[in-house]
Length: 158
View 1: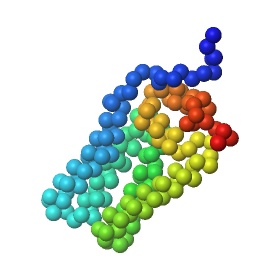
View 2: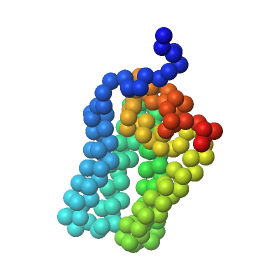
View 3: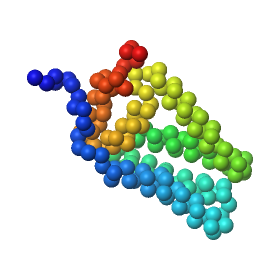
View 4: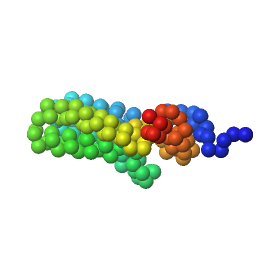
């Protein structure tokens, strides 16, 4: 007889590239396209970088409107974009706009490291966003992994 508390080793359904497509289009492809189009029309690099941040903002708004929840990575990306944009506009420097990414990446790394001290590491939620999306069955499966698999075992096991 199967243990009712055991989690099925396979998610509900197969990986669906379709659920990853909006993130790839809005957060990556559109940002690159906006930047390239604006710089070809002789818009300054600084303003082109700032405008390229509109697409990820639009995607976060779209996710929030359709599902009434924010994906874990959305608020972080938006915060980083806002901080970087403010720093770039204050300084007026393209260098600041480009170098900000290094500082923001380091900050993200420290957030991830710091989250190892809590019950579920930050990467648990980020990976859940990509694996489960908005599918309730997949979300339940992913959340059930936290105590039943070695990689998501509670900290006391370490």
